[in-house]
Length: 375
Image (cartoon, rainbow, N blue to C red; front, side, top):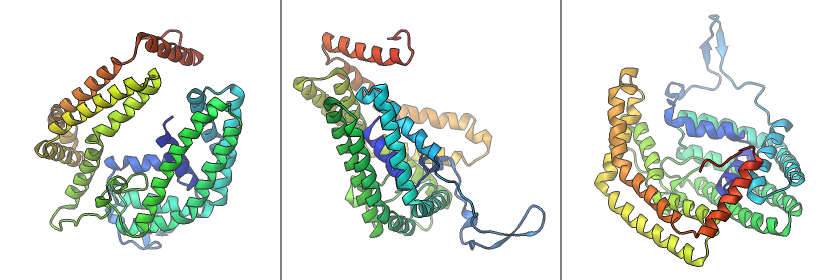
């Protein structure tokens, strides 16, 4: 269980975002068509019903609730993952499940109205804007989030405090370090909301990600070309979001190295060697990702996104195969670097470290019912 995942999930739940459902909707926008025909429609504008009678468009009186069973399911999910992360006993797992579910249920109940408003506002915005938050919507969302942030801090602090009391000293030291990083992630979200409230919203930003988090120069959206067709703009923005992730090799590789160091329990010399490998691979990646290369990838992804909006003979036929083949050819050098980095990192541990790591993974998977390790 990564710290980022813990932060994102607890933050989303605590602010009333119906957890995975809201996250899935936000992430699914790459393959969804914005409901442009609804723009400008009054909330209670009349519309024809299937029986021919006028139907009043208004919000439903009953909505989806956050139930104790949902809270218990979330608590069980985190408790199961924490069992392996911190080597918890069955009794500790039950304690963690109860602590998380109870604290979460209380936080959501205490902030139900604001949470509901945030869900509705977020769902409307992501569906209308292809997963993005325009400046005005971002400001509104930040205003809704502001009174909830203290409650989220309380949820983190109180939940961590109670869980820590159920742990051994060794477990607590690791858990405290992880929660410190999770709290830092929450601070990123809080700073994002402060920027949004001031109207500083980057291109493609949404509640879960904003390019301005790491690059303050991207806190203002670029001026849109009035001559650019709406379909092309959406495809371009999708392509640019995808490229922001694809080009971020250094962070992804650094994350892998961190996990490898933990898995093999690297010493100082091995960590130094791993950092040198990362530096070397990062420089080689930069040599590949020239402006010309980036533009080729960008145009390929724009064409791919636009093609999904065409008939099946285009989107699921030879033309799409050609696009994907070109993309694979363009990105293969980066994929090759990723494989090389992992092979070089794999060459750092000693035989003793390998044996110890292998035994740890064997024990962990045996407890889950695996008879024999395949490798």
